[in-house]
Image (cartoon, rainbow, N blue to C red):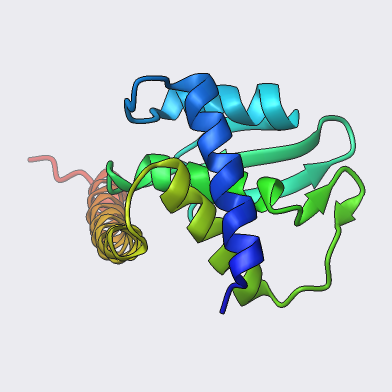
Amino acid sequence: MLSQKKKLELELEAQRLREKYKPANKLITVPDLERIAKEEYGVAVFYSPLVWPSIIGLTWEEGLVIEYFAYFAPYLRLTLGHEIGHVAAGHFDYLGPLTPTPRRIEDAEADYFSASLNQVSLEYLNWCRDKEVLKADHMLSKAGRLFFKANQYVRARLIKSRAPKITS
């Protein structure tokens, strides 16, 4: 799916960033990735549980903005690396998407960059993504159940408070 030329280009960029931000073969961390986004690409980064799945977008005031979140903790740095990968692969500039490349190819390039930067296999990245989806489904369904129970409680209290008082 990806050309060898594009893979090499992404690997070299990931290697350059690893050497600059994490020498001695240490793993890149989430704060490192946030620094990379800001210092290397001028991208504002925000962690927010209000965003799922993570996105990269444009704002007129700040240029590129990454908003990210993950329910499954090991996926956090992979998803942030993926969003940075879109910028590293040249999918965006400050005016909007640069390429008419189909979305699945862009996502494959961003995945490849994230795996290379985070020094994991694509299989591990995909496994984490699957876990993330399962965890998100669980968390969202749990939130739905909690909302339903809270709604029942409030309705019961409301009905009880409106019931006529019986006095003897």
